[in-house]
Image 1 (cartoon, rainbow, N blue to C red):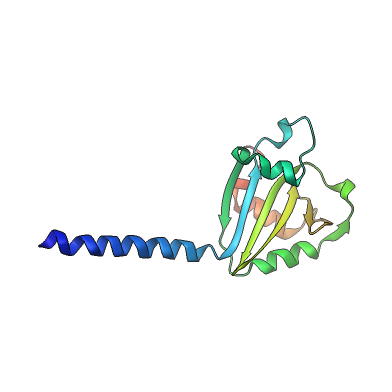
Image 2: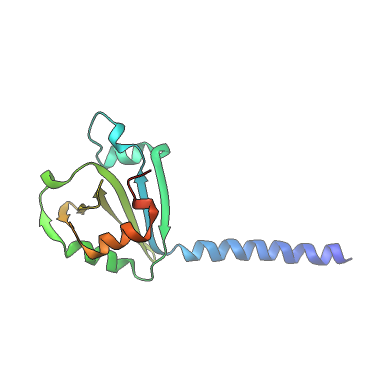
Length: 140
């Protein structure tokens, strides 16, 4: 009798745990790193970045307001495409049911958002990302 009582509770808990995990990813940023971008002989554009998913490492950054991330990037100095280096990162912002993608070069110094380029050299927010998360270090 105890087996039949415990089994539904375990199933119920398993389902509710999955639901909790999926809700937690509604807000935040998924950082995608192209692991071997420097090993490619041709420049990596957005299409080639996404076409080689086996080269991706991903990290979820739990933030309460991913819109702040976008606004911070947009506050950087505007530049042109020539300043953008090797495409290394994509940041997918999740804000409830809306997603945006921001791209960054190898050193997180130049950014692309909706066909506009920005330069965030020596920005404290970018330096905080590099310091706080080993994911953005050059060693791997």
